[in-house]
Image 1 (cartoon, rainbow, N blue to C red):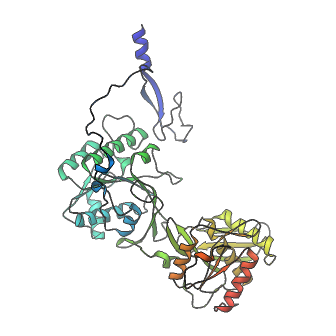
Image 2 (image 1 turned 120 degrees about the horizontal axis):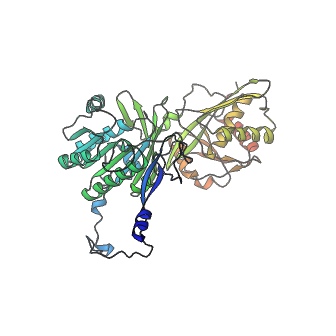
Image 3 (image 1 turned 45 degrees about the vertical axis):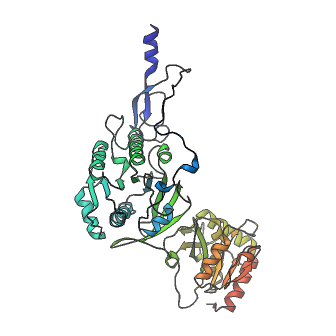
Length: 472
């Protein structure tokens, strides 16, 4: 009787959501955690037979050694020859490392990785293998022809079975493996549907084990949810060595690869790419994409310097002040934070006494498709709105950096020296910055410290008069 009772406890029916991993106490038509319908499935959960079980020791496969006697050569990064990707990875791909690249459909993940596979095959000396679970080899071949990514050491396979993928590894013996995507591969003998939590966890764990054992640099393409997070269980990000997010607007040519986790380098680097008809190209100096060249100064624009990871990007902010309207005027943004714009408008109207914006429509945007969400763009946003409202053009060689507080004060932001150095490199002559930032300024740029919005507007007006700004 005791044995049967123990066996019943050891294998009891349970329920788990195949989309998010939540375990409800009973079967439900809809998962209460993620809201998916029909994702709750029955699973068998094995429970420990006793809390006091003792695990016996065994001889390790490799004994522990003093750290000074361990060579770091196997962990040296191999460049992919895709400059911006190497920048984010910390020099290249490490043999045995597993990279998870996530992004929205159509953003260009497959195009980028096909270029990486071709560059690896041409320069690393070992074959590269691309396994596609979403497209046929003929479809991938057509893209490769368009990109010029045809090489004898670049191998393609279309598989959705993990066993077949491992068989291709035995046959090709690649130095680089790209799986597009991990959600389309299924592991035989594992519960759940392809792309579910259980399957994704099992497939990723198996590929990580093979990569570490054979020293294969591996890139897994991951899907994202509607809120931009990596689809699948959170443990997926813990299993891999590097997590990258591929971002970009389908209506813009700009693409960003943002590092989220990196065991071999900085986790806050950003790589810039440009999509074009012939594929995707690295942008080592992307600042020109975010600026507009004018023959004459135009009211309603101001330039700031944003930080994307460790990279400083000179960016233009534009604002258009519409006519007076009855009722609630529109506040429309593109590439900016609507909440911060609303705050800046309120502070401008309350603290400067020069602008009446409560009954006027305001439109604000960035140039080139970049998204500015950091507070350092507040001052440029305020000056662009004031420039458009007062019909006063800013000086063409002026940049504004600083956070705006509710009392109208200008607060200091991080990496001011790096921002000013980038502005000076591109030829900007005057910078409005928060108090205390002058010592960080490089040579060749005049720094004006402003303590509040009123002094910022006065300094911007003087700089415009001295550097060719024109009242329209």
